[in-house]
Length: 88
Image (cartoon, rainbow, N blue to C red; front, top):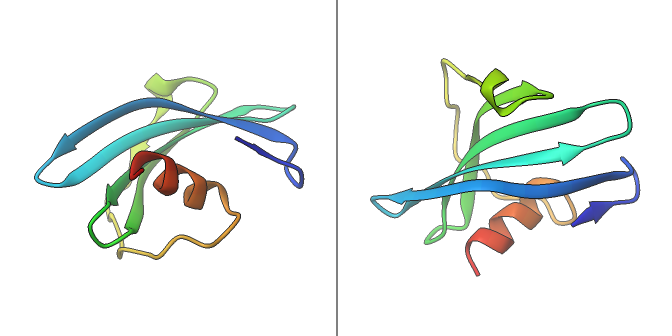
């Protein structure tokens, strides 16, 4: 998937599933850097939460100490495409 605004490309790196929760890592490749994002996705509810992020290397991903609330993806945002792809 790609985004015209950020001029980036996005790739699913890994996906695991446990108790109906998908944990995924995807990378966003931009001109200046590559961002690795870690998310939990509940396909039953269609909601997600970001649980970690890192720059330029998947080993640099730091898990957030507070996972935060479950959110509904916003249409045309990168997380919307990731949730849609994982839950298809």
